[in-house]
Length: 168
Image 1 (tube, helix red, strand yellow):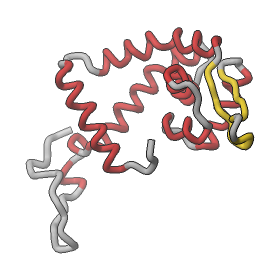
Image 2: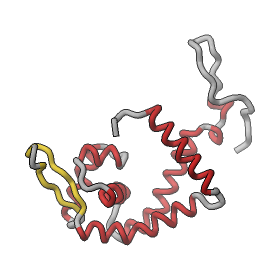
Image 3: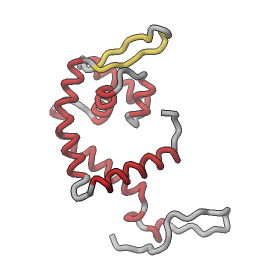
Image 4: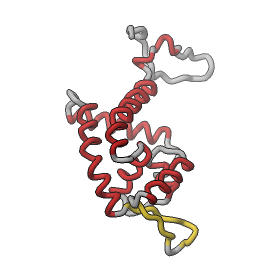
């Protein structure tokens, strides 16, 4: 796409009098949400065939990744961390449990709450797909220095604070 906008994208808007740049002026190549969606769509598409061979969906991959580093979480917490609708995560957890990759157990201090934990089989499944995930990360950040990567991660954390809906 052709470069169109030479102005400032991130400018404060002081009421309705301030002129905002139009989408056409900014262009998609300078509109961060569009670029982030493209990056994540490509990431998911690149991993899809590898995941399919292991009978793992993107939602299952995210759940197993989270559970591989977390002792236990509720389905609601898992859906937040995995950036997945709660109803989708409930079905995902059902399927992962059927596969023997996770288990659900009532929390001792509150029997209404179910904690989700990864099983030995789930950990083994995640360990099979981790090299593919990591290699895809390396491909995505090819030519980007470690310092740039760390600055990018710092920027993402600031953005998450700005749009945070959950405390975790």
